[in-house]
Image (cartoon, rainbow, N blue to C red; front, side, top):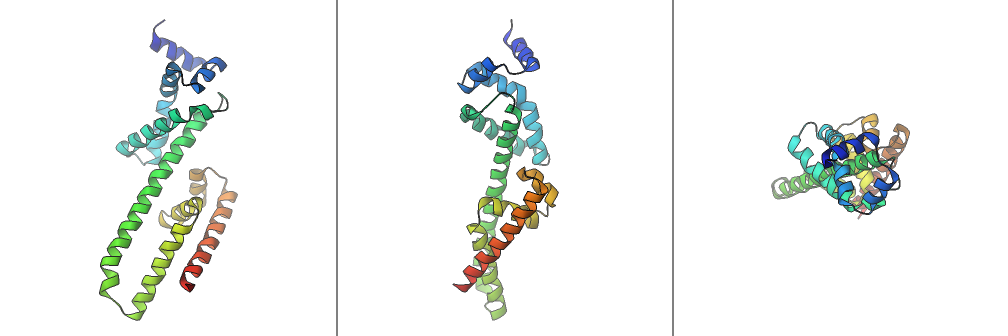
Length: 195
């Protein structure tokens, strides 16, 4: 039987326990099957996350399968392969968002340091600059999840429902997370301002 026909039949039938064990052990044919079976679903998921940015989606897609291949041994059973890949894709997307937000914040802080901070030293402006710097430092001190939900809510203007979808939690958990993140941020800012 031709290899491609075999993979199509396996995709229709699903993953047998033997195939799954071979996959976990790094069998090349099973790794190829994993890619063939799930590439369109995973790419579509990432493509939608990146709002149609094909190049970015391709980059994240590549990172997703690279991560999947390196952690395939962590799979517990053959019924959750798709959700496992979706979680990896989601994490790679969040990594991209975090990196871009961090890079953008650093660039903005560098620009502000060399322009606004040096140009105007009136008391009101200096206080505002100190508050902004305290805010940025406090954000950097937060847990990644807190940073993520606050960024999604207040920078990207996402609703609680949208945030809960992105972080894969229910709305109530997301609201609680936002509440704790805001309180922690307030305490961090207060601590920094008192120094």
